[in-house]
Image 1 (cartoon, helix red, strand yellow):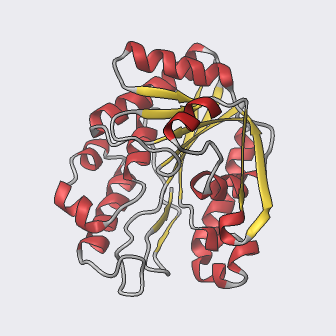
Image 2 (spheres, helix red, strand yellow; image 1 turned 90 degrees about the vertical axis):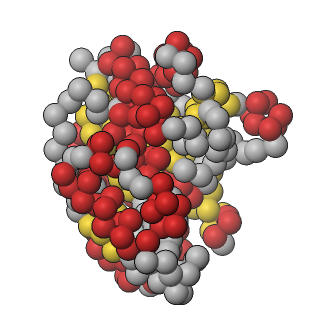
Length: 269
């Protein structure tokens, strides 16, 4: 019987890829080791499909995007390594089922192939939000198809509900699935970080990590909006949508690492 067999929170800083970090990745050694551990575990579970939820790529205020090209591919040329390329077969059947159920449940969603992307002036290429987690996963396991979903700025409740639809679609098609919620945490942990320091940054990260440890979905969904905005988070919506995929299952959480060596919070769970 198909089902979602695990949810993994994975950050996506390109600098943690050894081919790009060139030694700097050692400053995030706990993150790298935790990602390697997650990737090994995913390999042991051997899912037929990985559903990756990312806060990058084509993100719309009012709709979740599901990529519909038959091939999902991208490279790290933006970071000086166009030779680092990944290419995956889209699980089109599962992608279509997710869209079908989303529309039936009145969750705005959009299937995006190259033609649709061109009409919006966006790209269907996988960017670092997908490529960094998948770089680690493919070092351990390659026998999967991919479903690529980007977050939306819909209400948290609708994002969680869309997550439940992913789980329902996997079960309907008897598909063994692993879900990756791609996302960094606060970008405001230190003055030398990308957006400088804000005391809300560390406070937000402590709250997110604690709620994940406790499996407290309601706590995450009811975080103070001012704290979220001032904390400069990246991955909260990915996490909430990912947690929705586990709706109805007993939730057991394990935070493998948390650190912020470059002024950005990286959590692996």
